[in-house]
Image 1 (cartoon, one colour):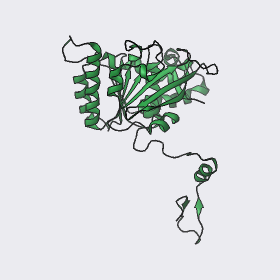
Image 2 (tube, rainbow, N blue to C red):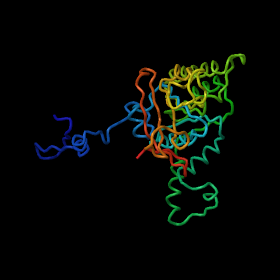
Image 3 (cartoon, rainbow, N blue to C red):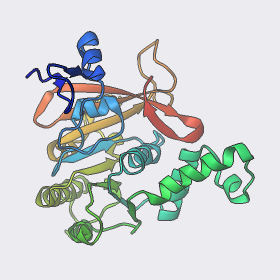
Image 4 (tube, rainbow, N blue to C red):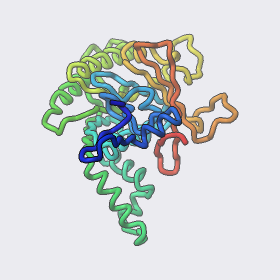
Length: 299
């Protein structure tokens, strides 16, 4: 039987149907409607899913972001895509912002309205149902936020081992690496401490079979002889490259200039390199909508 056909029961013998999706795919040599994330958690960004095949179990995905690039906006865009739209269960460890501040940012980003306006109930009748629907979707999302400040990595590992009391968690997000501490000697250099912390996070991710998305502000930490331009993954600190299964670097054109005359002001480049294949660097295009602090697919 042709795999592109579908037999329908109780139809006249010999009648065969072909899905329109398969015909479109065959005509345009595309994969519309196909699963881009076999066995992985979808990021909700189509090009990123094509590049990674989703976030895979037991893998560490480190996203290096310079201050002012939109780290929190990108984190919340990912969390919204995964938990609100794709119905995954996401645990967020946010040492930088309280759970209330994170929630407020997510509400403003998704509704496109300020919190003060929402709280004042100053909505037109035509807006009310739509906004209430958005808020209901956020409230129902399986997002769990731990805002313990300066969390020790040992405490973090114990906490994610204890996630089994929640509905099955599909992905863990950490914001961010440099805010984590460790029980090791304070005499150890900070890069060595961060390397030790990252290794412990990687160990527990593999142990539990959970993908961990780890944000880092180490994009500004250069190797001694490295140039100031951090638009290339090779310029990132060695401990990130050595201990990440996938290393990414977020580069917002309107916040950090790039040498592309035709680049859109709101275009974003996400550089990607897999530890298993360091020679193959990919670049995924995204778009940053500054007015609502939200990242979307580039179009």
